[in-house]
Image (cartoon, rainbow, N blue to C red; front, side, top):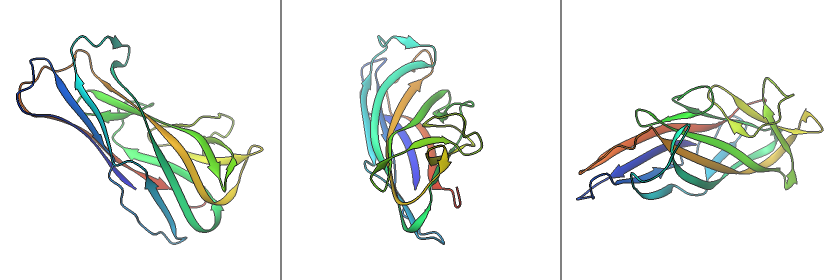
Length: 185
């Protein structure tokens, strides 16, 4: 699944206002094991950002949005997923020049059963946060588990650097990447 995150402000916006739109574009690809990834919502619209927004340590918080991630495989397999995008740092992905977005998988299910998620190479840490250069694997009782249908809510937290840019015309901010199923977990 390929995702592109985008924000745009256009037209005669009031000084200091920034319209923000985040897009997830889904591309279905079959792999050797016939697993497919999909995301439920292709666009997230944050609306206009006003300079009065209070900055947080990571920047101006544009809000929390949720989309659904699904992986469907033709045979039972160990499910591990990652998001490949430009890193903002070790915890999140780049959005525009100095912004960021963080991705957290919540309520993960494998074949309808609740499971845990852990980084593929550090199973002691139970975390649903998708970090740059890291895959999350589905676990049951601390061990990788096989299944055919994986689903999770993806929480998208997007931040702009301090202070928010002031725009009068179209301004484009992008973050891009793709979700991948990791063969063999």
